Length: 77
Length: 402
Image (cartoon, rainbow over all chains, first blue to last red):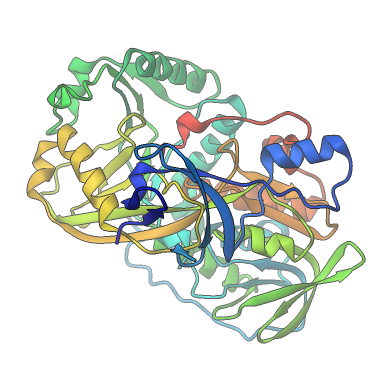
């Protein structure tokens, strides 16, 4: 089945209408300002489990939606 | 076929011991080739490869088997060309038939910008040792059977770079050839053993914890595909990786006349014909980071539309199988190899959608690094330090999957 995302404004739509957006979370134990910039630019938590992320409904209401998804199954929570 | 085609692969399995000089996590192509090179070329045989599923069952058995070195930056061109050269020798080296078939690869352009990019690719390839030339559309129409040059007006072909060294090999046979050679030289390879943690002494990694017991190790190599972030996090190493699914398919058997390997960046697909006559195709990665290996109809629907525009004869074929692998995508589409911030823990990752072609050179270089405790010049640019040092090697246009 095609990945479908439920938009609170438009209803359930196929993933083609959406743009994925990562919400970067720099770990607290990185304290140096330059190191935090490098981490934010390049590094990822790449969570294997439930992740909180932003989706932009480009071909719908053109709003950002924050959703939780299990990256092991692609099931939205 | 060649003189090795009758040789049968004999895998000698062993029980997992409690201590090794080198423990490699991940029994895919890169892990197995690293073990092979350590044992055969450096005499380091007290080595274990730990695979959680079966060897070559991850991306090493899910890729679309293309070997090429037509990259867009000097460092990757040199590295992949070394791998391409090693693939040419692999059957003689391992005395096993890996169905290596050098037939040339076409990288199509559909716009004026794409045409300029392929001219530039040909020039940079020639400068750094890869055999690539720019080709005009007329010649493409003459040499690729069944191609529709104007692609129904939607994606007209404006040129291509032809990479004469482009080849394919049977991925399972490559994995088995390295596994068998490593086993014969004394390497322990275990299947169905899952790594659950790494043993740390301060920052240093000194062993591996598995569901079949703990193993002490002088050096641990993270060579997994898909779960690289999870393994590295056990050593408190953070990676610039996002894991994305990549889907592929084969059609039913077709008259075995299609000798080309064709890739199109603009259309986002690549296609070749397997030794069995199936048309084998893949596309770009799925947009969401995910560890799910689920295949979907949406992928087939999308890629079929694009492929049939370019190759109308494929409209008469049926999809026989489709499958999915999960790919460790690095930010610059270039691998990440070598030391990490954790002493005793090395990585070979960031193989994204381009790992199969790199197996021989990747294994050779990682083994040299371990044996000599010094990063080989060939892979020095692929260090994880390059991100903090602003020395990234952005080469998305050569990944073939975007």
